[in-house]
Image (cartoon, rainbow, N blue to C red; front, side, top):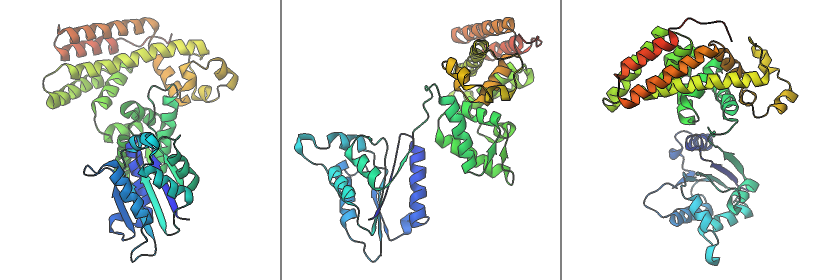
Length: 373
């Protein structure tokens, strides 16, 4: 029986990356030069979905020509949702049903079929046939709204780094997670960039990420918020200047750049308030070690299942508590009031945006650190 590979999911970059790896392993690089390979363009604008599937069906049934084996690649087929929804309607079998029947019966011994495309319904006969007869690869984007996003994404970044032969410090993972989110394409690109720049080193630090990764608005806003919480006035003012100049060059003279900087800071201080509340509920000591979170008992986790410090990665929980403890209750109140005032000034146009942000830096970061609350 021939081989079958199905690659699907809503993470388009990961799907295409995996299918290319499979095809190159089977056919060499570049795969197009291999006479055994027949590519059916699933993303063609010139053919209807049924016509593309008909070409694939014919390629599977056609014997190899001047080769011992044949490899058929249905490449980036974009219409699975439509063809599977219409499958069997009005008592008529579509071409996807014919391909499903071929797969169920077993592909010819000299045929390897590779199929990739987004969001194939796992309840349909086509997916079940592929699962029974071949190898399945499913790549789903991390859901930012999921309660377990932080923990899962933290582990995912560590796994991607390990796959590239790299080790990455926990605070560097947090930086990538907060500045890139769930975009696997950007994440892979940044890890590749880090790998190239750090050779022969294989360990990635937070400073490496700041020095080498793209200076996106998200990364600069992250730096600004961290500088505020660290009371690093020179660094915070530097970030104001960097982002304002960068975004104005790209978008024209607009306060949107300053608002993006402010909103990240607001989010960071809101997270500090939430962390203090969650830590109090969980009974976190004033100066917890990393091990306190790593060794948290299962019965405590179960009793506080809705506490977000329990749901996130232990190192991130530790860092959040360290960060939140650097401001007293009164200082947090003052910081939130300063952020609110800056937001009013930027939205209303009542002040020059750069000056509003610089005043915010001095009000929040210019205070002397008080004793931990």
